[in-house]
Image (cartoon, rainbow, N blue to C red; front, side, top):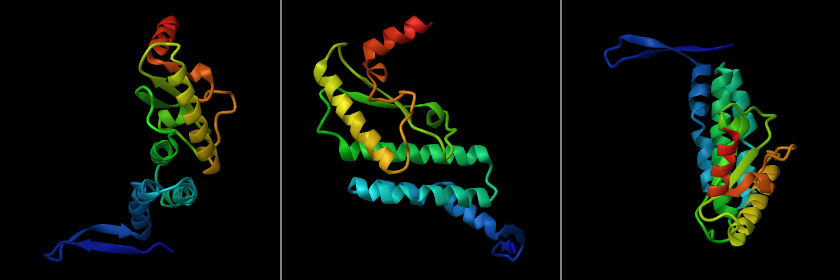
Length: 182
């Protein structure tokens, strides 16, 4: 059963009551333990091991009666942290031009659920048609998406991924494309 413990001020006055489920939620809600393990990973296999803690953390949050929208937001933040660390670990050297990885879909909306796939895009500074930037972006995207898949986060099956040239463009190309949509 659920245990309840009074929380008292130094004077002995009861300030409130904590349930043991509150403690579970507090220890996992911020996803600090997971994010710290992700940040400490020195190689992709360690990152995959750290990512294995995501599903149990989500279950613990559910069991602690954390709102579904909050669980989805936490899940999304952890997937972002995982992606950032993968980029750091697998980047094939410094990029030839400044580069930005874009989270799309449910992760970007902070609505990721355990069955969510990974939607992504890349944008780099500089002119359209820069083969060195495009080649670098393609190699980086492949490595990142492979790492995410190894960690249990598959790429979007419909092709909304940074390895697809439609989703990896120079900033001027993205700007022109978004203007055409408007």
